[in-house]
Amino acid sequence: MRYVLAVAEHASFTRAAQACFVVQSALSHQIARLEEELGVRLFHRTSRHVRLSPAGEAFLPVARQCLEAADRAAAEAVAAEGEIRGPLRIGVIPTVAAVDVPSALQAFRARHPQVAVRLAAGNSDDLIRQVADGALDLAFLGLPDGFPLSGVGGRRLARDRHRAFVAPDHRLASRRRLGLERLAEEPLIDFPAGTTGRRQTDLAFAAAGLRHEVAYETADMLLMQRLVRAGLGVALLASTFATQMPDLVAIPVAHAPVRTEHVIWGPFGPPPAAAEFLAGLDPR
Image (cartoon, rainbow, N blue to C red):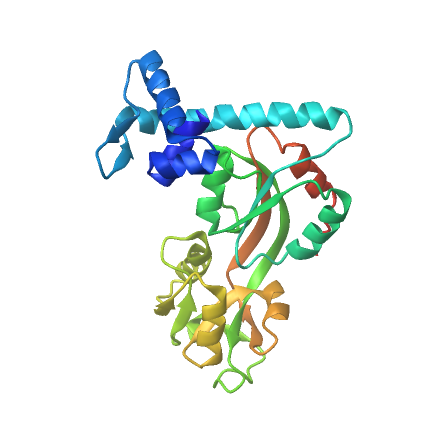
């Protein structure tokens, strides 16, 4: 099953064998034996391309869950003897603010230096799927207030209202408070349509019965900050994010979008390394 996952990930028997530290002939032989046992072909192979068959597409998520369960069983057995070891796979959204993730990792690393931490960045929608599929042990999310989470466990870390972020020389920079009706007149800089980050803003304007223009879409927070600094528009972001953008002006907004931050784990609970990391969290 590990070989099947490796081939699916690399779309190549050669690269999969290299990643698994085995010769290609041994990997190919094991996959052929598995296909013979199942009575189906898991991959369509040509001289240049390898892709999953419909049977392979169905096999993959369950195989991943089986391997996750096997790894979890080994980790639980070792943890019962007082030893915590990895890997620990954590997904993080770019705008996480409720927890200082680098400081938490520093403290965790001091306690458990033998755990290898693997970080993945992404939007909340993708991270939820990866945690549910067992590809990640934990993920830090930012979601619209009341967003339903299914297929995962977790807890809420914070609830926060957005502020309007503008450049210091922006025409709104001197305002002490803004309404959504005024912001609807401005070009906005926001996350891509369809993401949970964008949904927070869309829901707030829709609830106020207002239409708004998103002039620039990006999931890159550094680029978003540069666009705002250049005076190209206004960004609506969680107020807790203001400390990370000290060169911008953050203005309170009436009836602003609401964001809740969560940490989530798989449906069977966090594995030992993840549980140890969670125990040391100190939400801001």
